[in-house]
Image 1 (tube, rainbow, N blue to C red):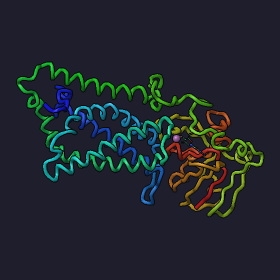
Image 2 (image 1 turned 60 degrees about the vertical axis):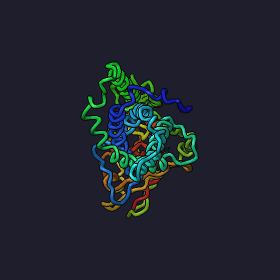
Image 3 (image 1 turned 180 degrees about the vertical axis):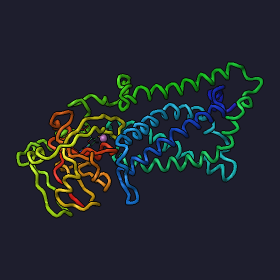
Image 4 (image 1 turned 90 degrees about the horizontal axis):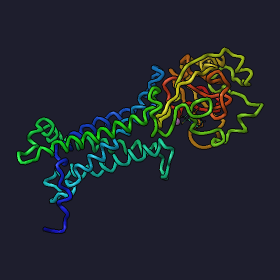
Length: 378
Ligand SMILES: Nc1nc2c(c(=O)[nH]1)N[C@H]1C(S)=C(S)[C@@H](COP(=O)(O)O)O[C@H]1N2
Ligand SMILES: [Mo]
């Protein structure tokens, strides 16, 4: 016997079937998480070939809720999967042949990427950024690396997995105690149970009927001024003074026949349109609110903008991210894309964007600019 503690690795739970079932589950959660993440990224960095649909208005709240939920569900699955295959990482010789070497090398980005994505994701929804890089950029690019490695892994494990899933008996040798199969089932039951429980205790941040259960969610969708959360306060954005300036004006300029400069009274005197729309934060919480204000398209018409005009919305905020937000043609002209003056029947709270905020259908929360002061038309 050499010094390697072999016996510690022995567990009836560590079978190909266990690993395959967990792998399959992770393939599903990662696949969904990747697709919804990609959609979110496209909305936030619209390439010319992609137009965000303005309807259904609550689509992003659903896709991003699913993104965060599948990410959270993956945490116990990933731990369990790593535990189940752990002894295999120390096999000797490390690989037999070229293809096997490729498969083994792909484990580095696969495991590293998976752990990175889940860790940064959880940190982000807790508004905790203990790293020097941009969360969004890193989370996005590492997702591609991870999914690439996952495709290699799935291709390599396809037949093993099918075999392991199709013939459970083949994995149960005659000498195996019946208790082993029970152990295995109990193990998987615990892992899937933990996954389900984590989702159940967080998803209430966006699914209203489960709100009371959202004990582990960093945000309660009903906690905050006027009954919903704030990500960046007016003080943190450094706009307290500018927002209270009696000379506040909304400026509409750029490619227009007539430049507009409107005071709060001017805006309040215009036709007010009502819409029920959610704030759907990328962090996975959402809160539906009753907004009221001036449709952007009314301002476009007033200023004599073109029918295919797009808009850049500018905030009073001077520093840091989310100061500006783009409206594509569909969203700029949607009847429910508003510069809201009121929410829930009251003037906006400072932290929700007083005096004026952008709110539109099917937009990530980060694009719903607060403290709006200027529209630049193109
Ligand atoms: N100017 C500005 N607008 C902003 C932000 C910001 O930091 N600055 N944060 C955005 C984010 S991330 C979200 S989720 C929503 C939150 O809106 P609320 O604070 O009214 O809930 O505002 C968005 N609008
Ligand atoms: Mo957000």
